[in-house]
Figure 1 (cartoon, one colour):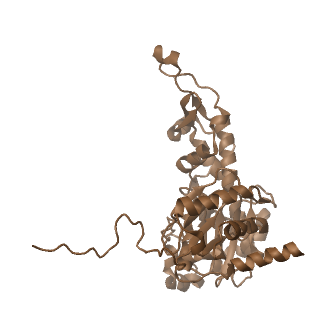
Figure 2 (cartoon, helix red, strand yellow):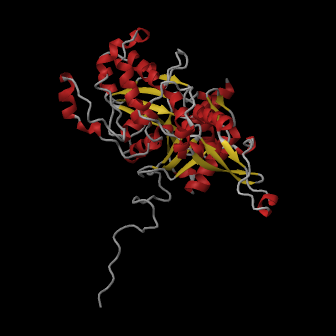
Figure 3 (tube, helix red, strand yellow):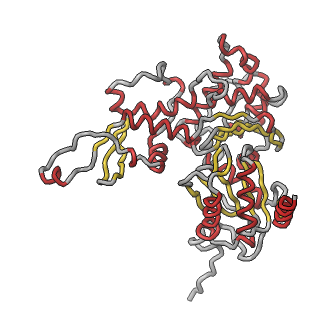
Amino acid sequence: MKQPSTPTGHSPAYLTSRRHSVYGTETKIVIDPGSKVIKVGFSGEASPRECIMIREILWDLDGIQDELGVLDIFRDIYFEQLQTDPKQRRVIIAENPLLSSPVKFAIMSVLFSNLQVPSVSFTPSPLLSLISAGRTTGLVVDIGYLQTVVSPVYASRPLDPHIMTTSFGGKYLSDRLRELIVEYATYYPPFTTQQLSTATSQPPPSTIPQDAITDAWIEDVKCKALFAEPLLRKREDDDEVMSESDDDASQISVKLQTNNGRGVVFIPGWIRTKVVEDLFDSKEDIDQPSIPECIVKCLQKLPIDTRRDLAANCLVVGGTASMVGFRTRLKNEIRELLTRSSETKKSLMDLSGLSASFEVLNDPIPSQASQPTDETTNRRKSNKVNMKAPAWNPSCYAWVGASLSGSVKLSAPEIQRNEFEESIEDKEIN
């Protein structure tokens, strides 16, 4: 009788192909702390173990808002999600370039004073995002929840003085979607007992209960319903409501749980694209530019000899970037903005030569019809990988880069626990 062979691979129940030591510190904890979603896992893995949605605001642009909430979320990460001893593993944190010092200090206080981790390494998230895409030079557009940050990185060096920001992001998208749903959507409440007994076909529409429109429900609608139209189909008048025939063609129904049961909300089709259009439309506001204008302004601030390399390697990351058609639309908007030479856009004329070179690395539909100039033909031939989109989800680029850097032992300088404790003691003495 033939003896059964010993399995050479890992158990299918084990989700990764990498074995983690129980007491060693070689495998690091990787944390990407976003203002809405925190992604956590182990270095050397291809995706986060858990993506934790933050229900209450822990920090914002003004600083830390809930220190106890930060402690609770990190204790949940270690003891519930990862189920590992925090004292035995070092930590890599993907640091947003505009992360405020109070927030950074609060995170270190929780990790060092409460969880007693050995060390923490803060690594710039734009650089990590590029590493996961196989680049060391590029323009990283991080469309986060609170704001959009455009960060140039050249030869693995973040150019922080040239960072540009705008308040258009996931929070603006959620607030605008909520306003339009309350004003224009149709809500059919659940059947009452009397309506069920009389076999009524459909209860009449009514006002949407405000307390039923939760943040989680809005996020669910954002993921399922919103998309970006192609540039050629952009409406000439965004304030004009579409006709009923066009509206019915693409309207969707979303279930809404209320205290009296589960109702149905019918969202007009034009809302699904109108919300996204606000991210691209120019408001003629210097302090609050649209996302394409923010990217072009960043290119204007860059040294002239770095513009073409950065424009040819634009990486769009963040949860909003996962929206259907968003990255392709953003690329076309920027190309049009770079070539525009109207009287109101004279300041952009010096960048018109970058239009043919501008590419979004993770565009799922790379443009094959674009004709590069003779100056860039050789560059395109030697760098054809620009036309391929990395396989990672846009919201996970920074985490994957941190996981990769941790596995090859390449990260920013580490802050040791004893160093942090000594600095706290010095502050108390002074």
